[in-house]
Length: 165
Image 1: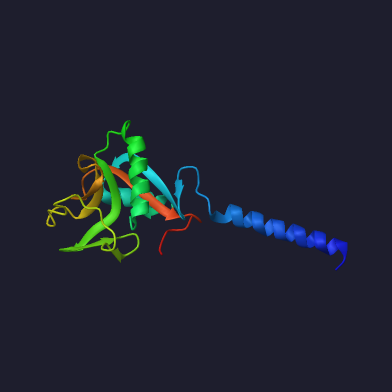
Image 2 (image 1 turned 135 degrees about the horizontal axis):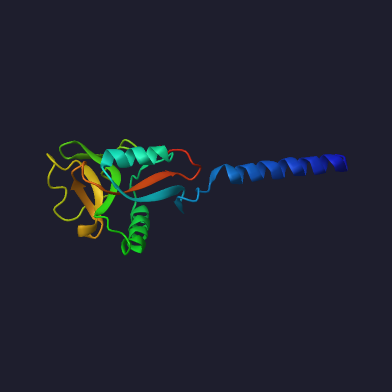
């Protein structure tokens, strides 16, 4: 191979590497990165539906908390913000699809492999059909009326696409 071809190959390789980095394993400045995903903590009170719409406007969806590590990350983020927050809790994408069956609406997965319900929760399936992290329960999971207003947590894949895995 001629020396000029090596330079051309090097330039092409560096260009592709730069595009890969820019294209998306980072989060935009409004989001916080954890593992492979990006999280946005909304501090304006909204109903569950309005919170989900706000997340979708950001290219994300309400969070699906599927592991202890993810839950612990979110819990620590909330604690670091709660001193200045007047919020009663934060919406997730969890909702009751039929009595006894909760599902993450953002992923369509059943909520069963990992949970962190506050003891005695969920307790009102006829009225409280949306899952939140409730401040009164130290941010353990609670079923709550979907029309209630609280903060919300959005999640998207680190590449900026909706998290659908």
